[in-house]
Image (cartoon, rainbow, N blue to C red; front, side, top):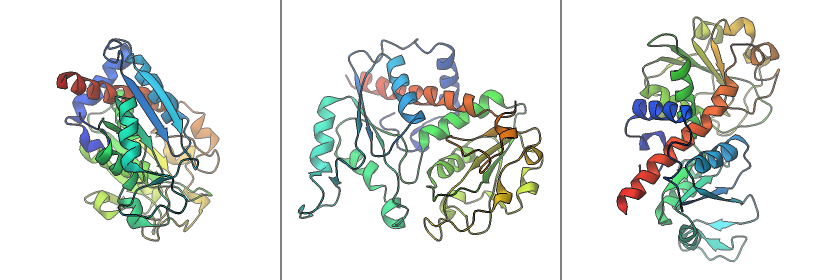
Length: 315
């Protein structure tokens, strides 16, 4: 594996999921692989699970970790030919090459603006790091994708499935803020690669990018969609068509114990209790969100392991 920018950087998803499950049994079995190797993590947005799980994954492999919380304090320029006389102080061309000298792998987290769809979909932050860095890049969530989360989700479903082809439903939920589509996008892409019965349910107007949901069943009736589900993944996202807008906060779409039945409840966290999902679901035995969060470590670890092996072969 050269980079991990999307789930399609995984050559064999089924094999990678099994590798991650084996790593979970003995997290330190490759602790010498990362000796004298460094991971730099760049956060253009705040993080809890992604930051801690990725750092732990790297340390399980024997790597050193450096973290830079960029936020709004380091304004990079991404456009070519720009006269940099405004608020950007450094160009990505220099920044990516300089950071590459200090590390063996760069992990980047950057959210979308939810204002300029074309610019967000260009993935200009992550793609410029891939273009100008001289070391592998890992996507810790970008404008349109969250491949580490999607891999953790696949691991969770594989560990807990009770049938060979489980029914998996992605259900939109209300939220007071406009949120990105990244988690939903990567989850949809991942489910299309797995042997599952998959469908999406959301109010009209919340359709995701049709290129991503092509050939996926969409049911606007939530209760009908959830019938006999084995896994229910609940997530809010803002409108794709009316880009970045909150079209409705319909509380009727909150996930309840009655709706979920015997299905496993999944969510990437953080989750707003009694807005996205009621307490009775989150606090029940059906909730697997803690196991799902734990699997973030092993999703990151299997990715870093495979990148380190590629670096090893190069040398």
